[in-house]
Image (cartoon, rainbow, N blue to C red):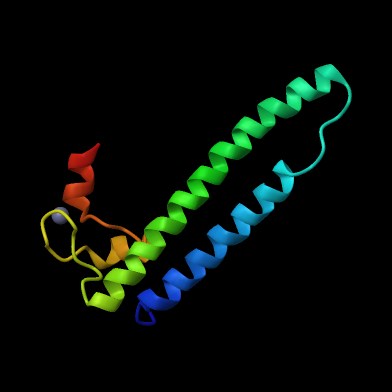
Length: 107
Ligand SMILES: [Zn+2]
């Protein structure tokens, strides 16, 4: 197994989120049908798209914060208890702010 590179992982994640956000913004920018029933359907879809967009933007914020921690040398430490975050967890969620235990406490 190759060593985990948080910088590359965060870059990949940021690229993924921004591509997703861009695609959603494109969808949201399309013109609405003049047909009323179709319009109602499109507005419902827009609500879903806006929720997805908010999710992608929240993800980008987390990646940005993780990059700051990387620059500070604080990357990989739990924001709550200060313990090291499990490496398996970081590989799955490179922008994770909390260790597994603290993330569980948050639920
Ligand atoms: Zn913790």
